Image (cartoon, rainbow, N blue to C red; front, side, top):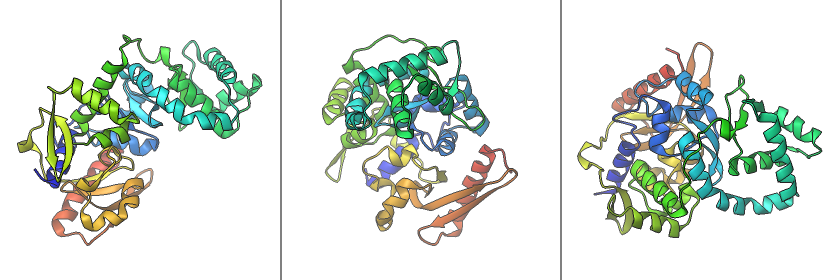
Amino acid sequence: MTTRDIANLRVYNQHLNHDKFKKPEEVVGHMCAMQAQEYAHAKWAIGLRMSSPSDKAVEKAMTNGAVLRTHVLRPTWHFVLPQDIRWMLSLTAPRINAGNAAMYKKQEVTDAIFNKSFDVFTKGLQGGKQLIRTEIAAALTQANIATNDLRLTILLMKAELEQLICSGARQGKQFTYALLDERAPMTPVIDRDEAVARLVLRYFTSHGPATINDFVHWSGLTVADAKTGIEINKSRLSNVIIEEISYWMSTDADFSTAKKTGAYLLPVYDELIIAYKNRDAMVPASFRDKIGAITFFPTIMVNNQVVGNWSRNMGKKNIDIELKPFNKLNKTQNQSIESAIQRFKKFNGVG
């Protein structure tokens, strides 16, 4: 097994080139959590893994609560399923709060202020109400709680981490918040080791082959947590050493079916890039000096290797795609990329 095999298997295990899912919630369920702060791009990340993708289908899943968007890992926005959100937050919130502690102190947000804001959220959102940020800010101001922009963000994130609020349906282009109890069913409480085991198994199943450090980078948990989860799942995970580096994946991984062909227009922060601390498997050595462009901008992937960046100009009746390859592309590569462009346009209802 080689480094290129790692890339091929990651693409395969993330279902980018086989057995694509029918529904957005099936994609998110398989991936466990998908980074989602750049919302339009994050919707396309789901679409890439669907058999008949459409922006409207992903938006509908967000509207009806089949998929939720909240702060749950590292922390940043992620898509998660309603049935996963509680055990995941119970597992990750303590570390996120610890990491945010200095910010809480700098903004002079005390436990008393948090609790007072939680009362405001509960009163304003109960009964199925869903409010945008400006409406929530107004309610907090009326309760004499200061809401400069960063402070409002802190109060909202803390309420998410405390399992009080989550995403509601969008109002136009505005995001809303809703009470978690009204968007997600109550699920059985599980102990920490079981939660760690779940997260570890689902990460290495959907993202493998990956290293312990990759998991730590993705989850925000510790090396000790990763090792605990691997030990609990030792009969369901396999290990391979490549160039003296240890990788983990599901025992069900099938080398023979991992395809090496095809092209993808990956959105910024796609799980195929952002979910790994080390991205060398997907990036040719000659392009590794461009890792910033690869990490923080949409990327073009051909034959499971990054070959450049891309951008789009969205019009009502047309979408202009600008390709920014790192090297000159050959005819076969351009043909594959053209197919990827048409798929992106179809997702957005154009062409």
